[in-house]
Length: 430
Image 1: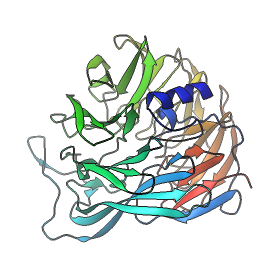
Image 2 (image 1 turned 120 degrees about the horizontal axis):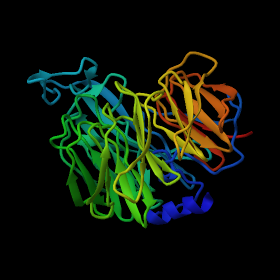
Image 3 (image 1 turned 60 degrees about the vertical axis):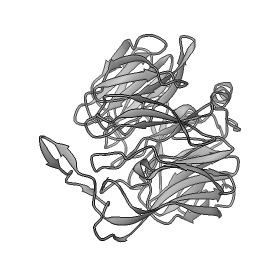
């Protein structure tokens, strides 16, 4: 496992080690840590190493390299006279999502760097200040994409409001506009991922007319390649997976699941789509890549990598609207919005259990992470349910924090980092 994580760092040309958590869902976008001695019990008064207030709102997860933690946030201000969201056309006329809001206000989009040991904010920078191009969902934020770091710099993405690079001391290296992005008035969700000297972004919009996969040079911010993809608005982050002697960049979508050459953007294969809102991120393991969706259709598709996009198996129940699947060991796990867990054989799709319930009613937005033989599922209420990994569902314990949680946890250096609605927590054995 450790060797595999180090290989991912080499592929990304990163100065990192297997204890770092450098991007959305950690090394390889897997949501899996190989750390063994993590705390599996905590509360507001137990095993909290530190708790630091973070101004504004954000659903981005923390990323960690060495003893530095990076995070983004949106501080929303007063209304801006004349500011309004871009017009969306749907069903033959102007259309606005009923939960759409926010573009009429001033936003200060920030990047924070904290000390992983003490929780002290080392620096904060304002990346953008002004109104937003498009609205956001009332439950979402303009700081939902998770940043990425290669140990040399941190890269923060805010959709239409730009992509920004800072060195580890907070000096802005460059900023880039990749073009304005119509997000159906719901904001963006896809996070940047790194490959060699590239930052790769999935930029899907509205009905798909302007959707594209885009790569920029992480040293300069200059665009390197752009590949159009006729896929309507998606929110998941693509995943890099190696198979058949090549590296594939796999992205989910309503109409199609598509693999690209990450170096050039060339399409390698196109497979079946999730036929639904493509919100969860794909995840890879056991020679397969898994793409799913939970609303309005529930689907999990397992594709063989290194080929022509052959479908190995599919499962059509038990998936969530937002929460991404998890591959851990020989099994793939999916959960409903209310936390009912399903465990499937990762290679065959055979159901091991499909009614794994938690002890209290809950809703989930954060995606699960796994380490030390346990799966951590964090609810919107701030409760983390520790589930025994494997083909038998056992809830080992429930750990509670005193604020809402929408961001997915991160794991690094013997700590679990959880971003609450108002604070960033570092949890460590005392």
